[in-house]
Length: 325
Image (tube, rainbow, N blue to C red; front, side):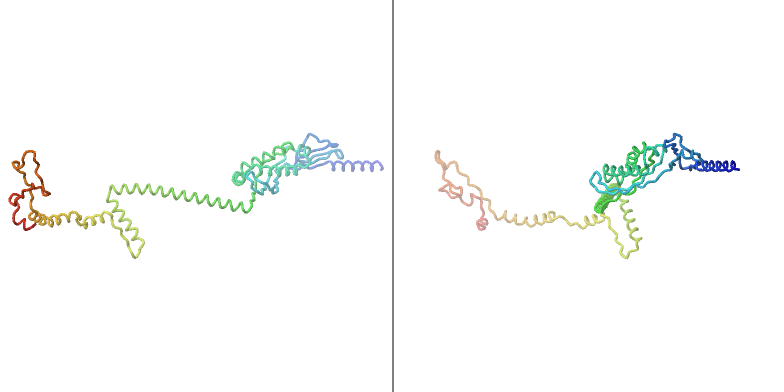
């Protein structure tokens, strides 16, 4: 009787030991067994695992991808702009043994490394890179975090910069810069359109100058377009050639041509009368025989030899001419 009781107690104790030595490892976990405080090299895979009671202890390590938000970090960029940047890191445990042995708390360690790396990448980058070139910054940030994490058995999958908070003054400056850039683009587009339109108009004018009928067709097309608007007033332009024709038809004779015949008719009688009235004065001829040798004749201020008065017959002046004088 006493022996049966003792065997029952022993069997119950063995059952308790067996129950306490049973461990269940989930699919997303890996088990690290410590026997008398020494880590066993064999990693326990998911399933039902038996441990030696009192001797073995097991620590479970999650091998899922961990999403860790990096707190907002305030820093100054390389171009001296104060910004606030936050990020998110994705990582997983690649070597459970190192994650359980090499570092005390790998989650806290990765978080601290991510914060310091984010502040470092802010100081090395410019504001334009933070706003437009985030892909390169994300790769550089992931590389900076992954370097120490590899020694802990952790693989950094990716790191993303979530938001960049700027001061209000910097936001207004960026808005003005964007507005000026868009204004510059609009002016360039308008100038290109004007240049293209000028080339097309020059080609069209050259064609119309060679074919006058094209100008008339264009005029009729303009009239049709204006008439389609159903306005009460229709303005019809006249061709320039028609105006030039009327100008040539209505142009009078030049003043020089009209004044020349009148001048000739008016000056004709006056000239004839002057010729009839004005006497022809002839210079008296000096007689060679009246001038002795070695003796110069004295001339008056009328060219007549002193001492001799020329007669009217010698000068050939008529009586009517004397009366006119």
